[in-house]
Length: 340
Image 1: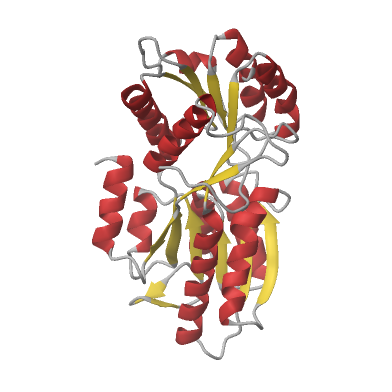
Image 2 (image 1 turned 90 degrees about the vertical axis):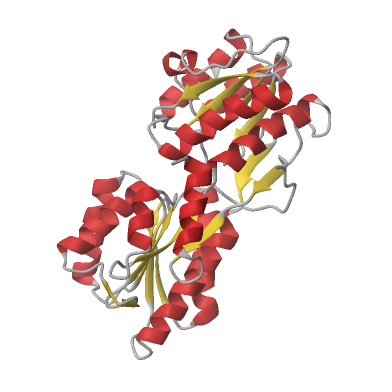
């Protein structure tokens, strides 16, 4: 599952915790040894991705995968890069949050002849290949669908949109924030955009931001919550204000979009009385296979170990929508990607 392609944008991710790693290895005979970084192994997306990487690498390439848990801590992610050389790995697919801090370790590994790739964000000037989800198209589509639904329900109420996420993160901006706004504006060129509000502190921060913002600007009606943990806070804040509701599939006060569609969001997206109506589905199975394939493509000489600028490879993301994806299809998608 490899897509070579256009230049898009996304976010940084690198991960690892050697303690968690040791228990997640898959032995392989005479195969390559691959370090597979995830940013937070408590996240179900990364759990599924890690499990598939182990299975797929062993089955297709006879390779051993060791998973490094970044524990949602940038310092842990960076420290674990040192283990790539020390642990005798042949290759690594990194998920890093602080690319600058990671650069010396990446260059050291390249100097030792280790194949290095990145997931989500390029690593400064290292030029290592980067695997990314094709997020921009989904963000645009979600914005377009939300604007269309709002205009149909409330043709006389102007659109006022906002995004909750990481305003200073290049890949988040290009894969989520900017294309979402473009999607809204494609329907209503006069829509007001309040821009991205820094919610990097997490769920509770997102809740407070929503409460404060909507107290001052109650006319806000399209909200893009750019990660599932932020959406938990966003929806809690809306509930506190007596908002977050649809009536028979029609918006009353706002429409919400999210990222990282999961079983919790499934219940809300397909609830005709919830204002969460679209979410970006990032597929752990396809993503894991793409990351492993990219390492092996470098090993086989099909992809350069380093280029200027870094080569980026894009893997499919999905628009999970109350309006355009039947509930049964979403249930099938969840079962295929996450099991159950």
